[in-house]
Length: 84
Length: 140
Image 1 (cartoon, rainbow over the protein chains, first blue to last red):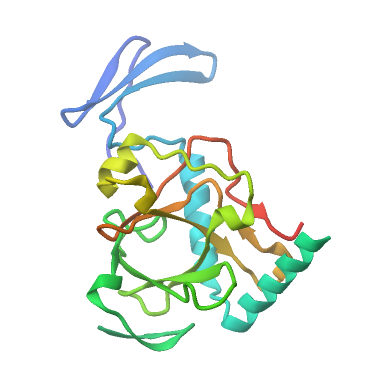
Image 2: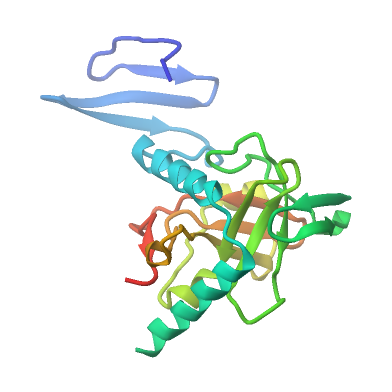
């Protein structure tokens, strides 16, 4: 997804998203940027890779819906595994 | 309402069985109405979270505490706010189970559990801060 807005900031500068979210560039070292975030508690913040991984896993889980038989087999295998 | 599902055929869903996910689910942000099917039917820990808006969409879910003994759910204030949780005893925790064709690749997502407030039937898939696996392989 292409960003709608691209801005350039220097260390120490900030961005405001809406009224309540502030993104600040805390430090820049080589190719790493330390980003500070000030946001209300209700706004969840996660590294994009984690969110993408969860999305991918949800999509994979729904691409193949197992039937009751498969679920029963899965349960049996799980029980056998626990007994070992 | 009536719904024709893959896993359970034609089902009847009472208003009280409808769980609303205001933010949808990661990957399905536009789907907000779900119901739980197959719970308490057998001793199997697996059941389904069925979409009421897309009859072909269902996720297998399970009680994570039955699958991973040391499981801990750290509920953030923000999640409590979205679900309007009054009593944490009324929060049902479920994790998405991925059961592919090859059963040995069966895994559960411990990083992002689904929380359902049974008092108001609001749900949300939350991402835990703890370093838990998105793919915890159950048969390996």
